[in-house]
Amino acid sequence: MLKTKITDLFGLKYPIFQGGMAWVATAELAAAVSNAGGLGIIGAGNAPASFVKEQIQKARKLTDKPFGVNVMLMSPFVDEVMETVLEERVSMITTGAGNPGKYISRLKERDIKVVPVVPSVALAKRMESIGADAIIAEGTESGGHIGELTTMALVPQVVDAVNIPVIAAGGIGDGRGVAAAFCLGASGVQLGTRFVCSTECTANEKYKQYIVNAKDRDAVVTGRTTGHPVRSLKNHLTREFEKAEQNGASKEELEKLGAGKLRDAVVYGDVLNGSVMAGQISGLINDIKPAKEIIEELFDDAQKIIKNLYGGLE
Ligand code: TUI
Image 1 (cartoon, rainbow, N blue to C red):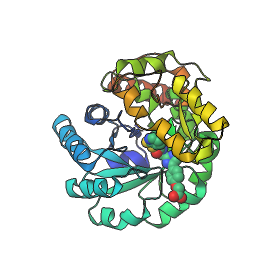
Image 2 (cartoon, protein in one colour):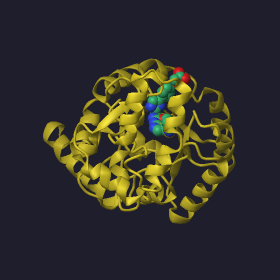
Image 3 (cartoon, helix red, strand yellow):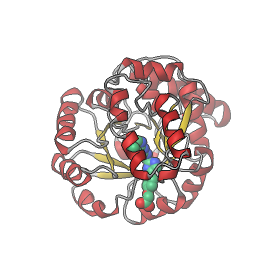
Image 4 (cartoon, protein in one colour):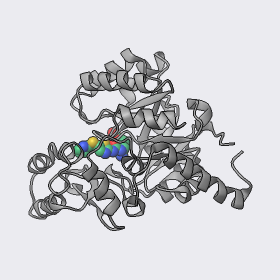
């Protein structure tokens, strides 16, 4: 009933990935999403390989379904994390914040599927040409490190530019967003912020609640002057960052201001001085519930909408 190129390629019940968010996307969340029929993804973020290995092994105890790892390419540990995913032979990886080109041949030799996150058509085409299995087109509505284009503009342009399946990400939080992504030509969706507000997510309850309480304009962008813009929920830190940028702070000063702040928010619940990375859809998210309920509701609602429009997905 929900067959798409993405369910076929990754052996899923539902064509949905859970974003591989640093600190947030632990083995517990990834396993819950995979057990519910989506694709759970462990976020490697800036963590060393030993942590990623531990998380992979933990997830294997919690689910017998496929799951993936998101490799954050700006991480100082990226090379050793890649070695770990090769050794552990995870079934797939997503990549973010850079070009995974130099790793692709070794990953493919081990039958590890590679799904890069891209913010542009040019990068999508390059990724297809070097052997990516699918592409995640992520709009600027997303939380964390972002590109410029909106999901609405980016997804159909990427769909037209490549022959591999496209997964839409950024700004999707309910069944209407899922249906819209399919209307734009996507074969699947990736959601991050919605899964932060799941029961199984191990992020501090204060982080989840800060998203639940957020309104439409609360997810702001800082760091444009560094070339690495980041979207997070407004708080003391975003205001301090804005001031520093207005006063012409150097890239190094700004990096220092942001260092360790995501962990402070996710792990310790410091939602005022930490970095509460979350997407523009935060304003739509009003509850915390099990990943299975989230996924079933997303696709029940999307199916109803799509049936009314076209008679259903395949
Ligand atoms: O990667 C993300 N989102 C992230 S990573 C992250 S961890 C972090 N922590 C502290 C500061 C900054 C980041 C939090 N959120 N999304 C995927 C994504 N990738 N969005 C945009 C891109 C991207 C950007 C440039 C992908 C490729 C790219 O290529 C540039 C090049 O090399 O051509």
